[in-house]
Image (cartoon, rainbow, N blue to C red; front, side, top):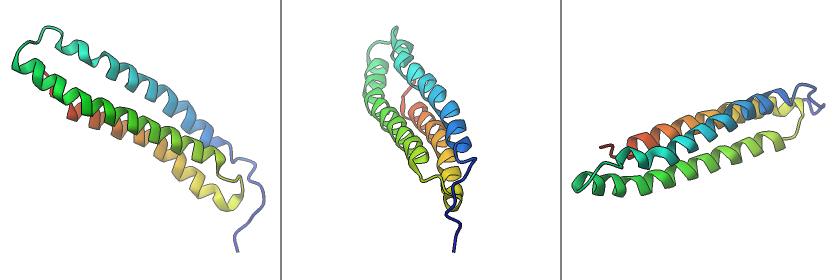
Length: 113
């Protein structure tokens, strides 16, 4: 039987994940929102390809960042018991990794000029 006592250090993993994930998510969102300026001078086929690829990439970025936010919330709301320490740690590691994977997917989906 696992220990159901309160974990006195249960807040460390969610807090660390929050301090890494939130700024990383804002930077990813900022970079994503500035991406359309990369094709300001484009015209013709290059602009069409960029516009066609930016829409789905922007959706992937938003959905991925929302998933990272849900993982953060799950990390904070997991009961602070010793038996859930590994779950909290896994959620704390998953949140910033989700932001990173989402940003890489965004960059790969955009057809850069």
